[in-house]
Length: 284
Image (cartoon, rainbow, N blue to C red; front, side, top):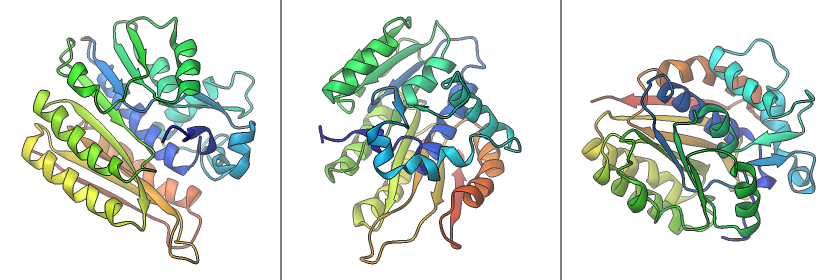
């Protein structure tokens, strides 16, 4: 687990979906005057060079953010997200990709609280340096799943939780489910954003129905599920087909915003004719 580096995958199709959802949730939460807390359980390094040797190994960003970066015809939610990516690249060229802490750094106000967790020692050190001047911020090298007990309920009462482990260890699937349940037990109105990879794997297929069932039983405002399928399995029947986001207690605006963006993401990021999306919601 501690060998995982998100730099290999920065800016890929999965980051596009995840960070589009994250920016919409944070924009919505910032509309109210009262501060809120963002808890990022697997924060990474904050930002990544797409010109570095990690990102260049498979150049996954070229089939993700690079396909959108220079477009002028994006729907407003995607255009907003791309404006943040461009702000992270002051010279105008796509050289760096902002991870979730960097996007949060753009969008959170000084009064909002950021709690970022990252176990990898190098990424933790980079993230600490990047966020050292931001007020109301703590960066920890503790396990993000175990942090939920300490962070919720939040002193701000309003809170958002982002969970996006690598899932390279299969126990992450069970940990995500347990963490969602714990979060909702402690603060049933927390906005919980869960990213997952779409794999030909039993654990991946089973997790979303289980997450929905927990949200049905415990969440105050239902759930929203978005999935973007961009690729086919490889010759051996494996590979990452796409990814999804399950948002518990979603902003009421999120469904329509994603409905505007997902068809274009299928068109621009799809790698085969069968590329598709799923968008479903259950309200309380």
